[in-house]
Image (cartoon, rainbow, N blue to C red; front, side, top):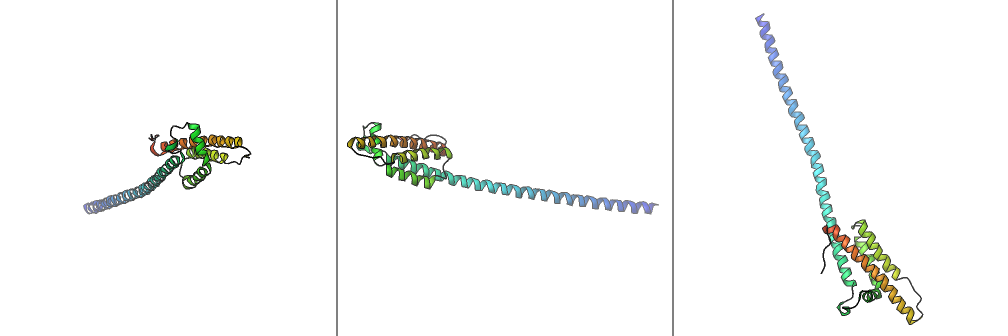
Length: 184
């Protein structure tokens, strides 16, 4: 009986050791698989976030370029220093003389940056474009009075265009910098 008990205990011990070894290997294998799976999943998420951040950074750079172009357009659009001291309406009449050029500049700006700027900024830009377009509607000019009326009309639309452009610049500044930037 003691031989039986010895064999039984030996087999039982060997089986237990085997089961424990297999359990340990299985636990290690499952743990490794889970760790690698999670690592791979987070690697994909991290890579996606890196790409999104890089794209957002590029878009932000383009929006800064749009803001610079818009500022340059406003600077070019406004009358030069020789008109200093002129009231706003007279200055807008001067802007109205070149309304064709300004309309073309707005169209070019929209082609270049339109897709990059937020919708609210795009709609304000559209207001400026519409004002420039309305100013260019043909009018029958038969006398000096008609010519003066046309100058005043173009000045009115130029004022609407400039005000819309200034609002566009402020909205784009908010989008790019989180605030309106004071321009001297």
